[in-house]
Image (cartoon, rainbow, N blue to C red; front, side, top):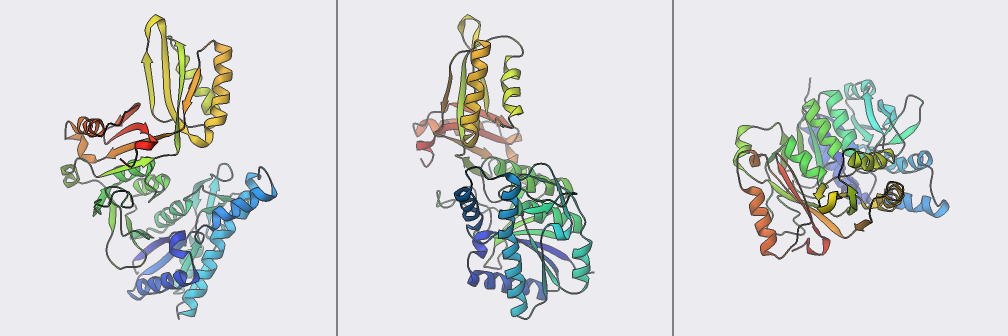
Length: 392
């Protein structure tokens, strides 16, 4: 049996008909090496944004079910066009939607989760010698409802298929030739990394690095799927994401990343007694609002302040809930700052290299950058700073 590769191409790699044909040639070159191939595609360029904008022009608040019906068509168009291009170039290919290849989902529309994959139809097509093209980002419930997996969900589709099919590797092909120690558009001296551990990549993805969806990395780690991030347009190797090995501990920090999608909220003058923080975070959780960096400061007179970050998109509703709660419970003022950035360093070597956090704080201090919140784990340190200081 031939090796099987799952390749995932993002929207920027498919943004024009010319680029689709270029990717089709790349796919055929891979197939010519004797490898069975499943290709997962995103929507072309900014298609998803355009479809959402179109929905908002006809409806102030598009229903989630109908939004899924609409945006799923972007990937469906890409997979059909890719199959056409491959066939026109002399290859054999067949296109499928997520539902057609047995990606079964559960959970709410626009942010569904993959429950299972029945890859029988893919295996039949591969047996017939065809390259299988799958529309990413989507699946279908047991009730035959089309669902989408959230922005960047094509990464999840690719890893789920790679796990179900026992693929040799799952490749993500992008405009970049791998993963860098920092965003090379912001930091020209950033270096490309040859390999990362699943844990490091999961932290980087969760902390703002856009190269892979955190849920895709989590799934790859759970099922042992080898990931390879490389260029869509050159044959050079990129960055491998694999199980951690002892050599990775020699590097204290593998990357610096940032997230500007959060806001800081502080609830002041809370009574310093058990259960207060639980009540605040339960209120937000019931509204499906995630919180991130949390700091509790004890103040004088038996009162304390609680600060945390949450997504900017949830700021308005979060403030409304918190101010209502503060009024009922007699808490102090609820204040916020939307103009923040979360700057993070990540590296498995932090476990065995003392003083890494101190060096980060010293570097920020030397640049005159104030830190307002800090969060740490075994392999990462995150600092909340003013967004205006991010590039510095």
